[in-house]
Image (cartoon, rainbow, N blue to C red; front, side, top):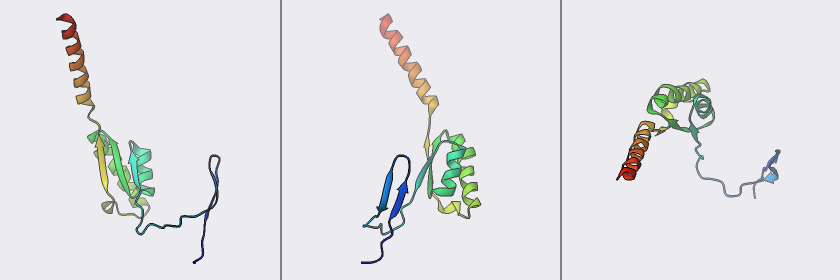
Length: 111
């Protein structure tokens, strides 16, 4: 058997000595990084392989994705090779639905 090199960790919460993964993945494990603002987008560009932005369409387009791309370039990575996905918050519709529910409740009380 080949030479084994394990991982040692002595953190506050978790300690491990000679931790070793016997079944190695056949391909690189990609890191998807979720980001709601600038700081997380910056970390995603530096440490992640892809980004999942969670915010309004405007914030994703004008803030999160540009910061992600800029930070990736700063560490020599090509952002065009990195997937960008958005989970869009549509708060406007949620407010309208709540208004309709309140209106329906009032109508039910009056009837």
